Amino acid sequence: MRSVTDCVLRYCAASLAALSMHLHRFGRVWLMSIVVIAAVVTAGYLAMFAAPAGFVPGTTVVIAPSASATSDARVLAEAHVIRSPRVLELLLRLLGTGKIVKEGAYRFARPENVLTVANRLTNGRYGIPSMRITFREGMSVREMAQEVAAEFPQIASSDFIAAGQPYEGYLFPDTYIFAPSATANSIVQEMHANFETKTAVLQQNLATSTHSFSDIVTVASLVQDEAATSEDQRMIAGIMWNRLAKGMPLQVDAVFGYIYGKQTYSPSFADLSVDSPYNTYTHTGLPPGPIGNPGLSALEAAAFPIKSKYLYYLTGKDGRMHYAATYAQHLANERTYL
Image 1 (cartoon, rainbow, N blue to C red):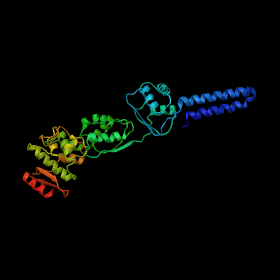
Image 2 (cartoon, rainbow, N blue to C red):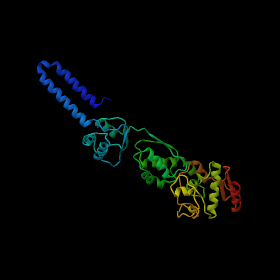
Image 3 (cartoon, rainbow, N blue to C red):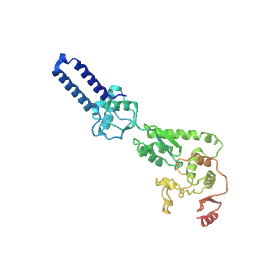
Image 4 (tube, helix red, strand yellow):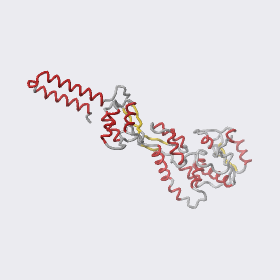
């Protein structure tokens, strides 16, 4: 599309050409006056509408959802995307009433005149491609927040945590493509909707289960990082249900990563007595809620575990799971495989 600057310059050139044909009527003085006026008009346009000299290619500006035209214009002026915030504010008000600017992050790869900037803001032309994010199975909301904040400059980790924490365990780990205008709430809602879709059949098949779906999700979040294969996950889920039925503490180490907000964490002896409702060494029963967002395999394992007499398990140095029905057998496995 031809820029406004080009149009103005072409108009001036055409006017001068027409005037030159009638030079004998107006004379050189009149012609020079018109040339000066055209130059002044063009310079004035450039001063008001062109990008400022301090513009940096690749500048990204975040337009907040609740911002006004005045604050939007000020933010863009402070980022040296536009020269005059008043001109942009006037253009935005002329283009419509209310909040017509599309929220989100805008990238400006090159200098643009204020009319083009206004057009981009009102049409949501972000200059940023859609974001592709993969959330691995078992990630907590806090871990997901770091991934989101790294891709979306307009979303703070704290905002995503606030939006996602009520849905911990119910955000399906998957690969997503989000628009540049995505918000913490919109991402969380899309992930939760995906969870409902992916677990619909599973939830239907639990009609006769003795466990609630919320308990199954919590167990699945514990099982997720405890085993690599679906068969071992089903075996460990069965052990957890056995221990719960007997009133034994679950003693799952994975909870300490959640307690301390770390992706991987090996608890020390002191950690085993930390005062937290998620501490499965000092508390019997299930934690208050999931410690991460499990994948479908872990969810199915928690819903349909392998029934056994086992109450203990460990991962040996051989990389295999070893099970025991008694504590004495468990100690023997420790001596043999650890």
